[in-house]
Amino acid sequence: MNPLIIALSKGRLLTQTLPLLKAAGIEPAEDLSDSRKLIFDTTRDDVKFIVLRAVDVPTFVARGAAHLGVSGLDQIAEQNLDDLYLPLDLKVSVCRLMTAGVVGAPLPLGRRRVATKYLHLAREYYARTGVQVELIKLYGAMELAPLVGLADEIVDIVDTGNTLKANGLEPRQLIMHSSARLVANKAAWKTRFEQLKPLVDQMEAALV
Ligand SMILES: Nc1ncnc2c1ncn2[C@@H]1O[C@H](COP(=O)(O)OP(=O)(O)OP(=O)(O)O)[C@@H](O)[C@H]1O
Ligand SMILES: O=P(O)(O)OC[C@H]1O[C@H](OP(=O)(O)OP(=O)(O)O)[C@H](O)[C@@H]1O
Image (cartoon, rainbow, N blue to C red; front, side, top):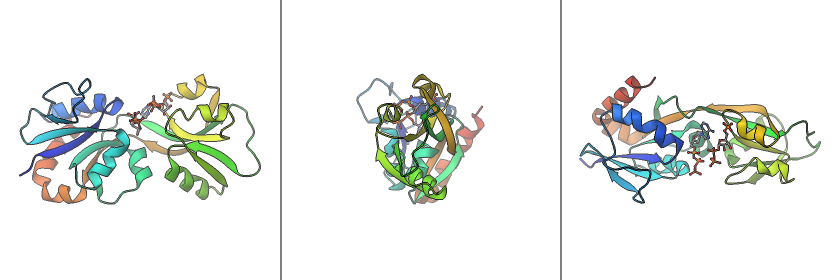
C-alpha cells in the first residue's frame, strides 16, 4: 500500500499536534519547523507528513491528496467541503469566531461593512440574524480595518481577547466555537480503516 499521507501546517497547530502524533508512534525524521522541505519522512516507513498553509489542509484531504490532516473547525466550516470526516476533536487551538468592533462605536443604520477572511461563515451568520452587510475580504490583520475606517465590524478569531483589547476593539457576537480537528478523507477512512483507526485511538488516548 502507498504510504499514509498526513497534512500538517506550521505554527500553533503543528506545535500542539506533534506530541499527539508522537504518542501514536509517529515522529518526523527531521525538524519540520526550520526546513524548506514540504514532504517529510517519519519514524514509520508507512507514514509521511506534508506541510501546507493551514487554510489548504481541508482541500488536500477532501481531494484525497492527503489521507489525514489537522485543521481548525473554523477553516473546515468556512470551506464546507464534501468528503471530509472528522474522527477526533484534538481540543487544542481552542478559540471562538466572533464579531468585533471599536469599543462603544455605534453601528450604521444601513448596510454594515464587515472585514473578514471568513466570507462564507460571515455571510451565513449575518443572513441568519437579518443584518445587511457588505463583506470585505482580508487575509490578515483584520483588527486594523475598523481603526482606519475600512469596516464597521470584523469577523475574526478570538482567544484571550488580547489582540482586540490592544487595538481598542471589543468582542460582540459569538458565531462559533472552534478547536483543532483531525480530518480524514471519507473514502480513505473506509479503505484504510485498519491503518487509521488505531492511530486515531492512540491520539485520543494521549489527549489531556
Ligand atoms: N489566537 C488563537 N488561539 C487559539 N487558536 C487559534 C488562534 N488563532 C487561530 N487559531 C486556530 O488555529 C488555526 C490555525 O491558525 P494559524 O494561525 O496557525 O493559521 P492561519 O493564520 O490560518 O494560517 P497562516 O499562518 O498560514 O496564514 C485557526 O484555523 C484557528 O482554528
Ligand atoms: O484573542 P487573542 O488571544 O489575542 O487571539 C486572537 C488573534 O489570534 C489570531 O491571530 P494569530 O496570532 O494567529 O496571527 P495571524 O494573524 O498570523 O493568524 C487571530 O487572527 C487574532 O488576531
